[in-house]
Image (cartoon, rainbow, N blue to C red):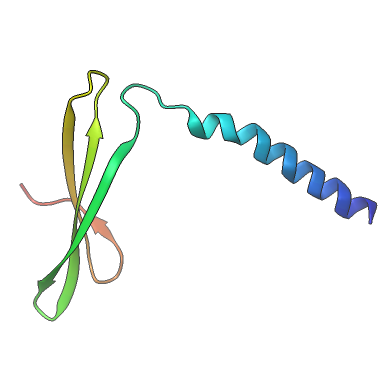
Length: 78
């Protein structure tokens, strides 16, 4: 019983110490919006995803990536 309580206490302490780190956003921060749309490619469906970020000046910029039928992401061939 004591071991179980010690493990639970360690988990609570570890979770509490990670929360402020998760909220930290260096530079312009993280993605503000992710939008994925299914696209039929041959017999399969892939997803085209756009991620909108904001830089430190508040200017938006968009990154595009794809997810194939196996769940693997890849970048577009520009």
